[in-house]
Length: 407
Image 1 (cartoon, one colour):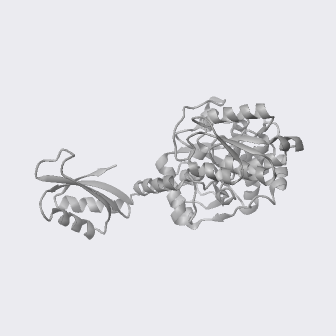
Image 2 (tube, one colour):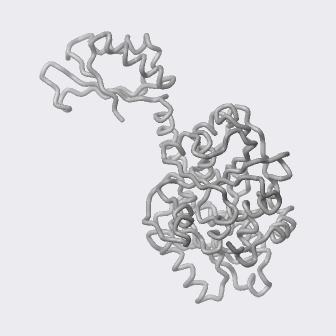
Image 3 (tube, one colour):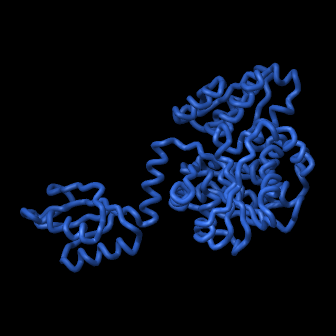
């Protein structure tokens, strides 16, 4: 598969020289806890610590720095609902370049505010990214502005590839890298930098199973457009792989795997607890794949890209809740009781003896089809894992309680 024009190891090196003093050289640290959990040495490349909270700054800045004086005068336009928007807004505004960002109408207020805070003009248009992108391209044609594509642009791909060069500096004898994949700009650049430097390094891509656009494109041999799907990994929720990034994935990427929503939520929770690191859904998929043994890696010295940390706090609360349920540390059960004094006290005593913490109760007599003289109580419990849940169930059965677990 031929290389797309303008993308090469030499161009990635030029991009690194161009942005070196303007981008945070993010740390890449060995995690003893995660290494033990995954069964291999795991190094976390923390590009969620960039100024705008994601790796997107690298590509956006490299593209902006390659603009001519006339292009800078006319301004730039981008379409994005997240990290690319903030990256373009920050680095264009810093250089006195007018930046217009078209965002879908349903974009969360926190992302709109952040993008405006970095100095861009935000235009709300369309029900989704595709409609926002059409409007952005219309504005470019009308104003003569430059469109900054989030991934399918050689300068953007080369900028993202600078992460690969940093990994070679930071990890001695690097054997594998696991990379989140949306449109493919990140993995395309990183894989090119690594494989052209040392072809023995394995590059694994990870997508959400709800939108595996690059995986399907590799299977078909051409980009295809997938139906829209909602996912907590919204940063990689790309329906169509790039025309430039697909050849890079075909040439350099060894394997692409997928992870589901609960696996992503669990990885976010693990990063919070074990590493005190906040990752958005897209930033946690690489770790999720390793923790769930989804890849073919077995013991390699592996870099995991934690590429973004911009997450809405209300979504984070829901993700934590899902992660706790997935890990067996929170469970909801429905218990049938005789409707008489002391019945609830006897039940809570059993739960207390099992050291289960009650988070919430819903006591109901009128619903669930219970008999007169009976009642039902839904109880949410904090637990220590699946073994603890099994012990609670055994204690309830021994006391002749009828119960069921509510998913």
